[in-house]
Length: 182
Image 1 (cartoon, rainbow, N blue to C red):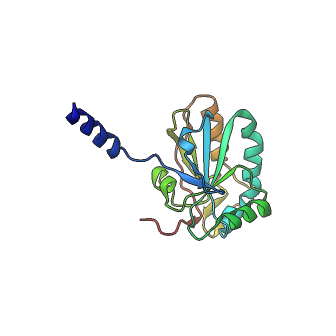
Image 2: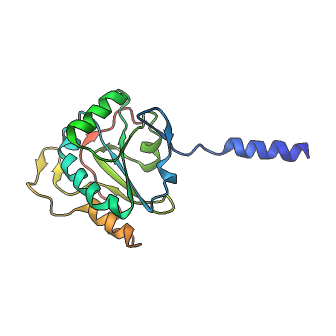
Image 3: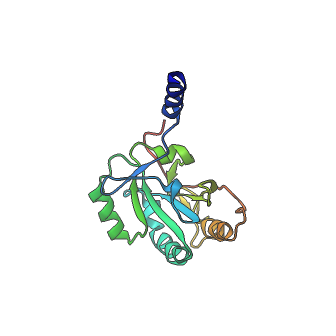
């Protein structure tokens, strides 16, 4: 009996903690257990010019898909950005969605994010159905189209809401590298 209890305690202790970030009040948040059928993690930084140029697009995507039940999280992975700086950034750029601080890079590591802006779409079971760019406006860090020709995140959200896998399910995001990745 004692052996069985010890064994179960060991098993419970060996389970990895689910990936969590902190909201701006310092409370842990796990977007993988959100009750929305589709969840978007948008990795952004206050000082990334490419992230900031996408603010109007992010606002349009939020306005279009949030009423359909899509939950939007703005994930700030830079350890130097405190809650006040993030609040100010959201107000300055009109960024909608819940802001999260991922200073331990729990979400970054879980989904494989490497740059900002980078989008990850989670399906009903918390599975990754899309990871990559918002659209194809940027061809390289120094090469930008006036308008995108593919709206990859919007297409992925439409597919996820319809219960279909997005095509493509991954694209290469171009932006500012997330610092301190190990």
